[in-house]
Amino acid sequence: MAKEIALKYGCNPNQKSSRIYVENGELPVEVLNGRPGYINFLDALNSWQLVKELKEATGLPAAASFKHVSPAGAAVGLPLSEVDRKIYFVDDSDLSPIACAYVRARGADRMSSYGDWAALSDVCDADTARLLKKEVSDGVIAPGYTEEALEILKQKKKGNYNVVKIDPSYVPEEIEHKQVFGITFEQGRNTIKIDHSLLTNIVSDNKNLPESAKRDLLIALIALKYTQSNSVAYAKDGQCIGIGAGQQSRVHCVRLAGNKADNWWLRQNPKVLNLPFKEGIRRADRDNTIDVYISEEHDDVLRDGTWENFFTEKPEVFTREEKRAWLDELQGVSLASDAFFPFGDNIERAHKSGVEFIVEPGGSIRDDNVIDTCNRYGMTLVFNGVRLFHH
Image (cartoon, one colour):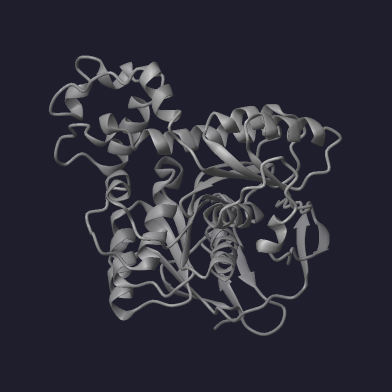
């Protein structure tokens, strides 16, 4: 390990003289391939903390897909169903748990994950490396790599793919610093432990909180701990399915993340699963086309002279009524917020995306309104008393 690593450049190419370093000792990271930049390492170190804590909280291998210092997706390594493999475009039927975790993390919001930084809680194996090699991705951080996995990754991006190894035993100092405009900020690190003890104060009439919902609420909360605020996360089946980051208004976070969750569910509709794509369509073009097809602008891909570029035959229209009916079948979704909900309108929007379980700090002067709205829809609401702002 080295004491410092020179970076390609800072946040932008004109910001030279960039590096990461430690005052004492050695860096806990080692670059095995490529030359990561400033934002790469911001993504790497934030995403590593996320997956490390996810594994500690759930006992399952975990992965994250990061973009611009916020997760586009995060998940644990549950097996993939047949539908999962179809919507995530995975041919392999028997992937390792850590590979399944990355498939889920990457697949929930494929548009946002384009050009991502990947984080793995466990040693990167060949299964995961082969998945990474197929995707447009900037780099990966993991506690180790098998020889086969490292060889596969070194072939990516003409040998320039960023591969970073981190010491999983590294513990940073309790006090952290950052500079803004030449002024140093200092604070204690956010070492709050997110576990089941934060899910005991159920304030709604409905007290039902199954183990699957507890798992999903923990996944959402840990993801929010490393998401630029304001932020909310929807989760289901061991993965985040919609994350809203960096919005000034909380209801805008809920809408943004809810739209992503809706998109994830709409992709599972038979009309979407059976779209007649031509052979050889680029992965990114296919993903973009699906997103447009299920959006209000679907005519853009069904127009004569356009659909022929992507499909062997013209797909049927996916009507607004059909989409709403399909969305009404989405159930059992969990929602976490990094700060309290100030109005019941957040709950109203969450209900439209199948949310049944919510965790938030509480403490708003309108908590009663939020609780009443949850009770109207039979939702389970937990106040955890913990704010998770991240900047």
